[in-house]
Length: 123
Image (tube, rainbow, N blue to C red; front, side, top):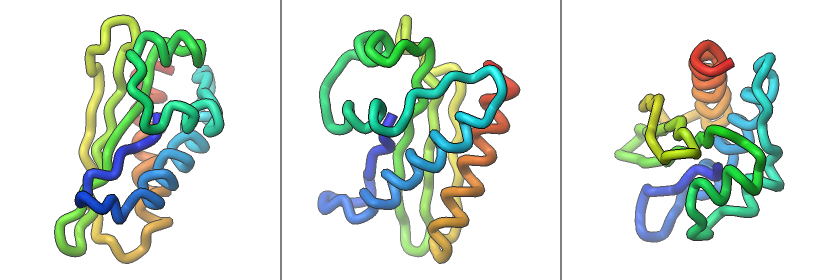
């Protein structure tokens, strides 16, 4: 699911959040055994208030990955969650703090770490 920008009321990191979503989809789709909905399907739900079960049913998935971006000074915090669609329970979560200089490297590092963790957990 599209990551949410929780940085400020102006949502100044929305492009970074969208890039984080895109990179995570790319990395997860390479994990053997995982079926990952594409970015177009995922971004369709951006900003919409749809129950998790409805999203999962529409996408044909059992789990949803979502997250958020926050920022404090030069540090970017990315929180990622794996949610079981049938009941809405969070079954895995991780928070990553990174210095904010190289945004592409941050997206790559975190997406790689998440794909590795989730691949072992549900793959």
